[in-house]
Every structure is written in C-alpha cells, then in structure tokens.
Length: 174
Image 1: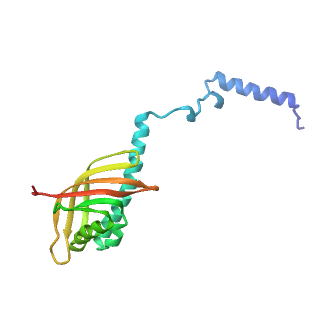
Image 2: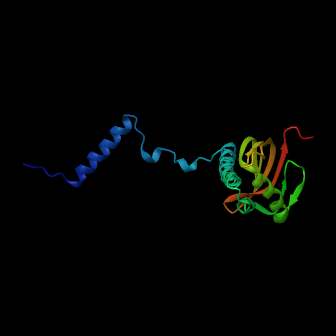
C-alpha cells in the first residue's frame, strides 16, 4: 500500500531537511556573497590592461616580421599610422608613408627576416611603448645582417595597434 503525503507534510519535510543542513554547517546559496560584488584592485586592472595591449602589439609585430620575411614592403607600410616615424640604423629619419616606404623598403629588401626581443614594455591610454633588441637576418645575397636596440611606440587603431615610431640603433654605432 502506497501512502500519499499531504502537501503540508512535504513542506515540513523540506523545511526539516533545510534546518538539518544548516545545523550541519552548510551555507545556503543566498548566504554566499556574489562574486560580482567584488571590485578588482587597481593593480589587477592595470595588469589585465597591459596583458591585453601586449597581445595586440604582438600581433602587429608578428605581421611586421612576416612582411620582412616575405620582403613585402606594402604590408610593412600598412602597419604604420599616417605621419609615423621610422629611423633606421643609418640615423636618417623617415616621416610619413612616402618616407617610410623608402626607409623600410630598403631594409626589407636587403634582410632575410626580423627577430625582436622585448626588454621593456608599458602602455598608457592609446599608446604603447616597447624597448628591446632586434636582429635582421642576412638576405638572399648574404648582406643585411644587423643587430642592435630599438624603441617602438605603438598607437591604438581600432582593436589593434599600429606603429607610430620605430627607431633602430645598430650595435657599435655612435
């Protein structure tokens, strides 16, 4: 024979189980503080910002490395903002797309690849700053190998970054 419980006895059973769980030390869901009420520290917010910018800048620099590897001056030029500056290791300043095409074009054509090692990185607002070492691999004719330091300033462009200033200084140069 099956005994049918009344709705009243079911409520009593549920409330009894809830009291037993509380007595055993369990916390109810409503007693737990919601995670969205916690405000992240400014340090954490800054680190997340820098991490996001570093990844976006890295994508642009990967495209630059690929353009140098393929000797694609047009692709390299697309990575610069209008009015940008490129100063090669020869010390000549190249401004704007026409100047940068001449400066970076000569660099891209005589080298076989580009490697960048980051030594310092920071960002603020829409600008990112990077300092490090560069190595241009020798090109197909065996010339173009060069090592030195670089300074790079990137400017936010939509969700990504483009080069605003790229300054190279070869090892041993005055």
